[in-house]
Length: 609
Image (cartoon, rainbow, N blue to C red; front, side, top):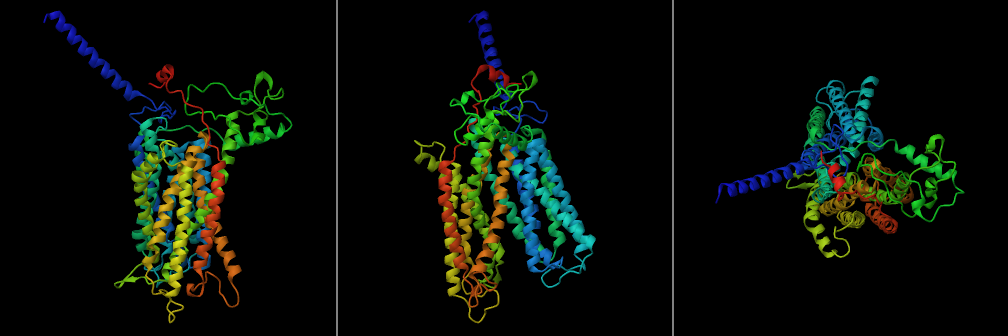
């Protein structure tokens, strides 16, 4: 071979190697398709941001934060009775108010995130408030509240406290409520932001993230319910609270460590003003005729610098009265052809309001499921306390049976991800290649919840058959083992995987880009309202079922009541709710986002940095 030929071969190999190197560099510099940005506001480079490095940090952060929160919440009622000197009724009422406030603050956190701060800043600020509240609670408990030393257990109540000390305690626990409530809806959405839903591989990871997110939440609460709950039940409140504070601080530090790798979406302004503009504009034009062609409705042309995150919503049928807000008339423009947003709004703004209106019926149907879910922390525990709780001389705390729920959640997440979802995808390949939809999974969750209530009612029926006649007013007043409760806890855990994980995915996917955190907050408010509806339902049942001969279905001594009838009532109500849910799910129209132009060569060039 001549020198010239050798030179040509070498040159070709060098060129080929250089092309491969350039392609690899281009791949490393490829930006995400969904319009996410890095911390400097530049398009996020796929290789250096987001994905499972950021996702795993946020999952660990969620587990630590949940551990810290339930380290306070799981035994707060005992702290109020043993340390703060409240009676059982006042303590239960205080805990209900505190828990409800947590979920109200979730709406505040979602609003600030969607409107002004963005999800990263909201998570950081509310986690800092969370840590401050826990540290304040730990210091005040250690120095002022748990006095004299050694008090606060079942045998030794603590001394009375001054007004200032009581005020410091309530400021601390409500800072905890504000911090955790504001943080919770944002961390779920922020974690999902780390995966590009328009990328084939990352879109699957985004779906998986919600399952692992709920698993992390349950694993954190498992440690609180067992280890921390044991120390606090023994009166070692300082250890429990300081462990919670340390866990929250560690979670915050891990969150901040991932700052250079996170992907962000910019806040899109106050959603309330956009909603009000649509309502006012449509009301002002209530006599205006709506055109048959939706293309005649008003929409802003183009995008801001090809920002894929700022997606438009396509027009959908339904709620046509709101379309009047986007009908163009001669009065809609002011000087210099500037549009008056209180007279004329875009189709995207109109569709945002329609989207919320369509989500509300689905959300309302989930509240009754939350009523079933809340029984695990109340009536299930009372039922367990009235059963035989000793095994070979070892005492099983009734509240610890919730561990079977958490283990069930962990098991069914993997069973669903690895077995049920692939199987459903194969069986339904012709109709829906993606397997079960979120709405279908939520419906399955309702069915399993009905089964859980039936199981609980059957267990209670047999518990009453085995009640001890010589022990009418004491705990363990039935010879039936507490382990007969395992099926109802396992069924509740399985239903959570389908309902709550599906709910997170559904509301996150269907909420408009400017309301993603609000979608996650809907899940939390569903749980909150479930608590309130459960309390109202118990009150109504007791008032109706109580008579001179009968102390009601749920008396202090369960052997004199009929808790089984209450469980069967919940099963019947959930069945009716399931029927209503089927109607709402059939009626629901999925939101239609404007497609991102990912195949256009010019757009692909813009997506490189």
